[in-house]
Length: 83
Image 1 (cartoon, rainbow, N blue to C red):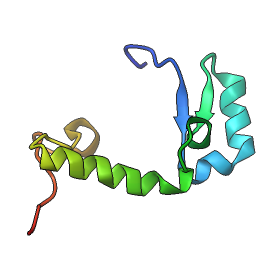
Image 2: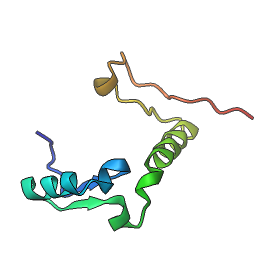
Image 3: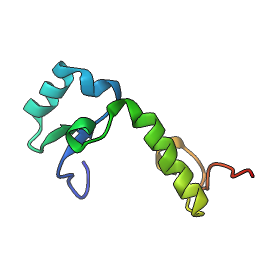
Image 4: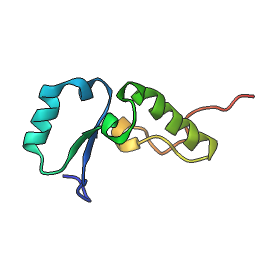
């Protein structure tokens, strides 16, 4: 169970083109189910956006891993800035 409860589900990547998947989520959930396109973004750019977020966190010296999801022992700053 999520806490706090999300107010919407946003689906990106290839799954956002799968109408069976989208309709199943919409039928099962009581929250809006949106795609990246609904928000003015390109679902095909999902990976590029994710790496841009990771790079931003690295540049600002913020930990950008999720130990509970990956099994890492502690939070770390992933990435290396080279000049």
